[in-house]
Image (cartoon, rainbow over all chains, first blue to last red; front, top):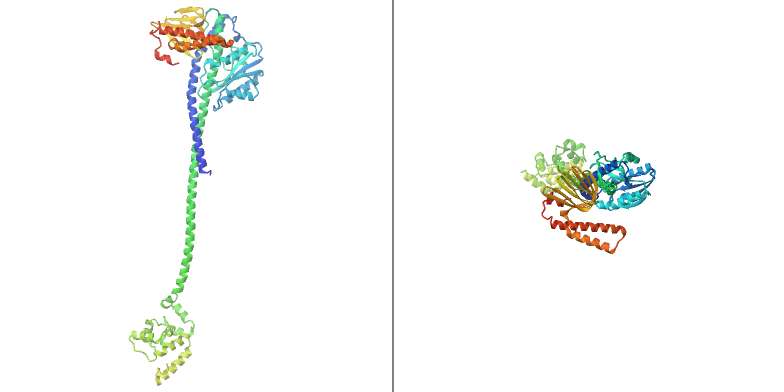
Length: 442
Length: 152
């Protein structure tokens, strides 16, 4: 995907180009209309002149003739007046006429020299090594007949002097806005016959026919004078019309080319805009992905940190709360606590705690009072002191046992699992108690 | 029977009037007046004034050489150059005449000499016709309305 900025710049430049081509199209459209109108306007003279020419020829039965009307028996040298444009950007306009002229020159296979009107034709002919005897460029956009007089003069002089035996005009015939046809048309000698036109092959435009019948004229001062007046004008005019046709064709071709260019530019802008939007969306998406990726990476690290914390806390909590469930709930834990002496006390051990009645002086009631005070194992009893025990028993509203001071020792033995010693101690205690009391011993 | 009159130059059709009564053209050998049913004539024209008359109205043109094709019901003037006498600018013509006169007085190349002589003749004709328009012919009815004059 190309960078956004690049696409945006291309869109901008293509838009600029399309503006230029659109302007050129509009300019050409107006020019083609004007060139057409001028070509039409000058046709009136040409038709009349042609009519008069035919009449003169018919009337004189070929006796009176103008040198420009005389065909040469042998055609050795040809002059081609090539009309092209000064400027490009007119599609295939120049290419077409140049190709036709090239083929024409090949087919004629005679010494051919060129007079070029327009820069494009001149450049191509010179590049192709053709003989260019004269070139005329930068004609005004709306040429007058006086603008082409020098060109006509040159061609007429070349023909009259015998330098060339035939002069042709290569130009682009304007058929309509869409069609322009490159042609090579015979010019000099001016011909009223059609077969002479065949010389140049397929690329010849047929001469217009005048159907109006011959009139028997009087000539004043004489036919030759009239011909001398008419023929040069008519000759000039043919070139002038070819030029106007060519200009109309040029503008029409440019208009079509520019319209195509504008259409293409519009299409290109649409394509580029699509690409631009895609690139933009891709950029946005990747930005979002970046953010989401960053966030989830952060989340993961947070999670793992929280996990370790939690685990640590759980471990700590487990360590702290271990004894509590042992006493309160689990009989299994109770057995663990008794584990050091599993054999004997197992049968004596009750659901909770040790059987405190094993201690001499502690009956079932006394035991219940001690358990109520939280002293439910031998170990705890052993760990407590007389005061605590006393308080526990008094809290239960019972009388103190005379053996109470010995409980601590008994409990210690029981807790240690020293059952033999305990029995022995209790035996002694019983004897002593029965004989002299317990206080003396303790 | 009216005459169909056409005045064309190489560049354009200058004037057309299908119902004219009389045409005067400056033939080389003098002004030729053409009425309907004239015998067919082909003749060359010099520098001069062409007049087309239709009823009370008329139209005048300066013609600088050409050919006229005359038939019983039709007159076609093929002029090298033509302009309406009503459009002549005498000041410009005077300036052109002086320029051409100077060129001739100084003496120029032979081919330019010919051009200069033509220019002088043209300017002189323009002056002559222009003065006529402001003098005796002023205020005459025209075949073509004034508005059409400007557009070519």
